[in-house]
Image (cartoon, rainbow, N blue to C red):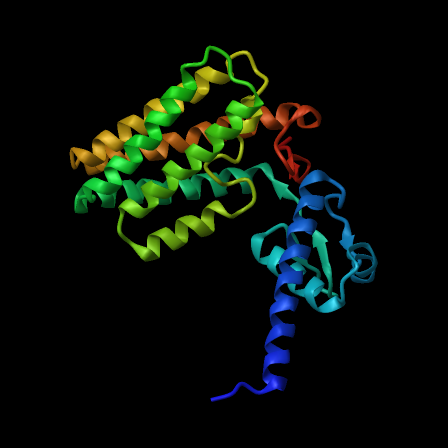
Length: 256
């Protein structure tokens, strides 16, 4: 059965439009987090058409997706503005992610985890241990830690064997500043930077051990406590937002 040329052209156009929307979304996210689009500023759609060199259709799709991410807010009279967040907003998002990951750890311990997944998680932590053997961590080392840390947290989410819970953890982690590594970079240039990562790694080891030993309550409690490190780093980032390396820190309103 041959494919209609008209249908093929329409599909190609839709695919190209989707690709353009993704590119626009990525570029706008970068501008927001870098402060090029200031907190509270209204987004001028026509200005973006000129600046991005795209039509309105992919830009509108990108704006809608950024609104779903929480970086933009829909204005009552139409259009979008760059969203600002209270310190409490961010703290609550981190708490939510910690609560969900705690539940994942509990379910993993109760249900049991496949040996292959436990082995994969252990190997990930071995790589972090190797990284932390350095007496001083540079920017590249912190970048590697962020990747490995994200990998471990994703494996932890999978251990619960719950598509529903994994989806909710992913959603909570995608909220601005709420990911497991959202504020890790805050420590990068502090004298005790490595120490805090050692504490986090110790908690990683403890929760994996609790899951292996089927200690559900202990596993949940460790992950709830683990999220407190991100809360601590949030406070540090807000002490000197001008010097912070956390993207988008200027979007957070410090509690007074």
